[in-house]
Length: 444
Image (cartoon, rainbow, N blue to C red; front, side, top):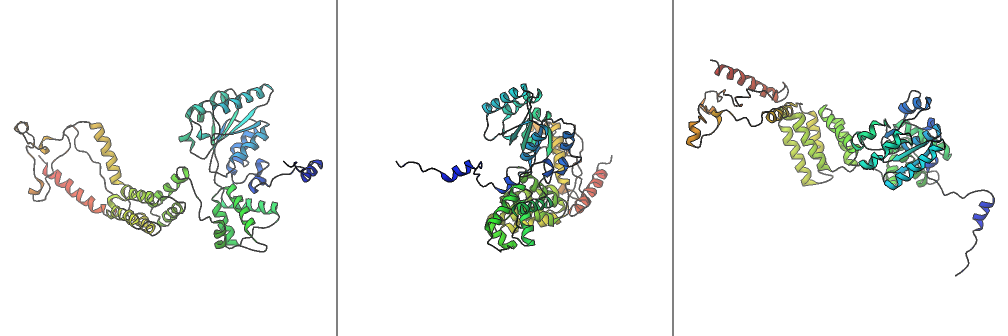
């Protein structure tokens, strides 16, 4: 075995008092050194922000940072520890268990005896189960740690009520275009060179970041790596180089529900342009088109209903067309259905009527219908007057008998109240006509 060759260059670095450092990614090199350097979170870090006020009082309670990735949650937690002279400890719920938590708590207790507190930053805190979340409660209550948990999920759904009651939730916003531009300007100053992009490509790069500061800087670094000397990319070249069509969201997380909610509300608000925008956002992000088709069918029955009975037919046809054509051709059928329901007259009368009828039916329990509308297949039932007095509507001149069909103990109810819009205007006329006819036929 040959002897190991001495690392002369490394020894020279050590002798000179220098350490060889591996290249650091741009997001790490540009990580803010002070809270005032954090961009895009002025609502909590500005002059009147929640964290600014806490720091002015020199008191810091346990916090939950809720927001999308790349908005500064970890950085702010680290800077808070510096500002309050607390020992910063970080764990991730993905890689930590009960034994790891016990070690951290024991170290924090020992540190507290020396007069120094601990800020415990827990990344992905929502991934801890109920028992693990409960283990934080004693050390939060006695001041052993100041907990700062970070989550991309809605804390109301993912965190224990006991943990939430002992913490303040602060919401981190996605970075807007101005904040992303500020990051790019800072990156250019640090790198000593501009991004090799024309104006349109630069705007496209901002959009590709989708409010994520870390992603924005990673994309910028990829652009610099890809550019040859003197080369300037346009928007088409940028997309080809980065191979990034659109922002991607986790289909099991809040981004998924936020966008489908935005699509639904745009349809309800009769805004086909906004509805198409959100539809395309979700399709571009890889959403299952059949999921979207099913949601559009739901919109047809919830928000259009009988104001335009064709809406349900068209939405079902769009779903079938996508099933037949597949992607991308079938996506146009879903887009057409979205435009149709967005521009259709709106009514939730059927939706409300169904809900009201369900509530009354549940409360009424086992009340029998009135005997006159029950069949009498046996002699016993006939002797009990089942079917007695029933009038066959088709035998009346108007095709309408005006009889009551609700249980006697319940009395007549009104659930469906159609508005004077779309096809329901005609239904309203029929109901008003039948109401007057019923009243006339039942006069003593």
